[in-house]
Every structure is written in C-alpha cells, then in structure tokens.
Amino acid sequence: MSQYNQRRSDNHGRSHYPSNRSSRNGNRQPKKDYIHPSKFIQPAKPVSVEEYVPDHSFADFTLDLLIQNNLEAMGFVSPSPIQDKTIAEGLLGKDIVGIANTGTGKTAAYMIPVIQRLIKEPNSKVIVLAPTRELAEQIEDQCRKIAKGSGIVGTLLIGGVAMRPQLQELRYNPRIIIGTPGRIKDHLVRQSLSLSNCNIVILDEVDRMLDMGFVNDIRMILGQTMPQRQSLYFSATLDTRVKTIIEGFSIDPVYISVRTTESSDNVEQNIITYDSASDKMSKLYDVLIQKSSVKTLVFDDTHRSVERLAKELDARGFSTDSLHGGKSQSQRQRVLKRFKENEVKVLVATDVAARGLDVPDITHVINFSLPQSYQDYVHRIGRTGRAGKVGYALTFVAK
Image (tube, one colour):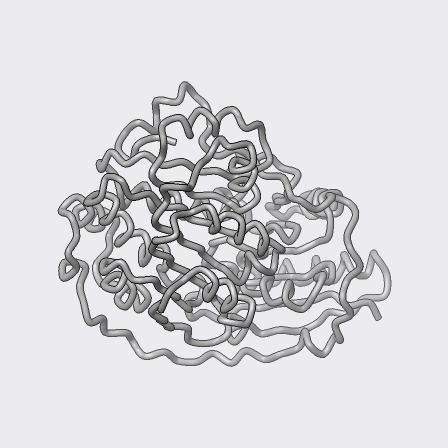
C-alpha cells in the first residue's frame, strides 16, 4: 500500500483491493439450526436517545496539527460518544475494551490516537484485524484520510488472490497493517510478514470474528506481536468468548461502553408463509413493489441461488444486483457503490453481506432463505433499522 499522502497512485494500475472469496463452498451449505418461526416475529421497540453532549471537542485532544487539519477536512466537528471517551484514554497508551453498536464512529475512535502515536514514535507499528474484507476496506479508507500527508506507509491484506501484489507492498515495511485474520495468518506462515516489532494491536468487531471461527487465528497472530503492547478491542457484545481473548492478551484494560439498545430493537420483524416456489416468488414481488421498500437487501443461500434470484428480479423490472464470495473484489466494490448510491434498489446476497456492510439507509431485509443460525439472523437484520430509523425484516417460512 502507499504512504498516506499521494503515493497511492504510483502502483501502475495495480488494484489495492484484491478479492477474497468466501471460505464456504458456493453451493453446499452445512445443516441449518432449527429456528422456530415465532423468533422471526417481533415488533420494533425504538428507544428515544437523548442528544449526546461530549465532554471534549477534537481540538481539546493533544493531536498533531496534520491530524487536526485532516479531521476538519473530513467534517469532524463534535466527537461521538465512543470517540469522546476513547481518544483521551488511547492517547495515554492504555489498553481499551470498547463496547459499541455498529455505526457509532469507533474506527476514528481508535485510529486517531494510534496515528498520533505513529507520528510521534517512528518505531511504532500497528496491526488492525477485522472480520470481513469490506470492513477492512472501510477501516483502511478512514485511516488513510486521518493520516493523509503523514508519510506513514500502510498495507491492506485481505485474502483470496495471488500473494504477489501484497508481497510487493510488504517490502516497504508498512507501519499500519489492516487485514482479515486468514490472510494475515497466511503471510505469517510464509514469513512474508513479521509482527515481532508490532507494539499496537486493534481487534474490530471481536465478537463477529469469533462467530466466524477465527479464534485460533487471532491467538496465533496476537502471540507474534510484542509482549509489551497497547491493545484495543471493539465489540458489540462482551460475552465469555470475547472476555477470554481480552484477558489472555491485555493487562488492566479500560472498559468503555456506549452501547445503547440491541440492533434489532429498531426492526419490525415478521414472517411470510408460502406453499410453493411460484407462490414464494409472487410474495417477494408483492413486498418489493410496496412504496415503503425503498432499498432492500435480500438474503439467499448460495452463489447460484443468489445469481438466479437476481436475474429473475431484474427480469421483473427491479434495479437489482448480486453480492457473494464468488465475485472478485473489484466487482464487489462496484456492486456496493451502486447500492449505496441508489443505482441499485434491490441487492441479493449471501451471508457475506450480513457482516461489515455499511449502508445506513436500507429499509428492508428479506430472508428469502432461512439463516444458518439465529445469530446469523441477528446479523442479517442488523443491516436495517440503523441511525435511529425503524427498519423491516421479513423471513420466508414454508407452510
């Protein structure tokens, strides 16, 4: 990856965002957990949240002028709750456990103090782990904006393609490493990456990484960083698994919680029963033609079923696209860009879209196929009902 000034264009046309194919087979799925249909029926319980009055402004923090100017250019005015409470502790070099809902500004909360430290300490180095390549890209994008002009070199390591482009970037000895656990582990195994001098570790969405089975990879990666390090963990939940990871790799961390409600509280949940494939498609059509269905995310099981359904909806006149692990990274970027910019109103996807997808104005999530587990269901419907808005989740259930 380039320095965080203008070297990003000096890659002779080579993409910085390689693809990362899903680890699951595109057409074979493990046996699904049984979920009683009643669990898919729940009225929305929106909670009014008082406007937060921060204790600090960004100008109050001891930050390099370069960072202050970049934050101003990014439109940062008042810190969000997680930023207000985290930045000051992070600047002191403390280990931090942040419990916050998705979309609360946590990336800036941890990257601002870390970039400040990298500027002041030329020998410091950070690794950031994220569960999905989409989230890793979002982190890298914001990191690049905050550190713009600093000359700090970073790289984005996400899997699924040939190693060569990433190997070339690693030769620059990047001080910011952002990636997914699987690809980071691959580089460590082949010794193209060393973390022996890495003294800052960030784990974003720890609970989701554990849900996805990355626990051993995380332990292996953290075990190769410096024993004396600053560790920052961010998670939507703080269950036993998350606590075990934190307790094994941190010393006396500061706990900061700004979590408000469950992500599903703002989602009106219901089921749609059907008795045949044609009836199922007809009822999906009925939902999509409603005026309230402004931007809809439809989940299906496999690459093939997603493509098939997307083509069927496109033929019926809906602006539709598809997203799954079988697409290249550039394809996935284009699809998400079109969806975010409302060029596509219906996105049909596998569970790759259930995690790390940051599209704040999705009105409906439709489970055209049942999720693998109830936890997967919660992740799916968490894509709607965000930023205080009420969303809708509909799950198809056979009669």
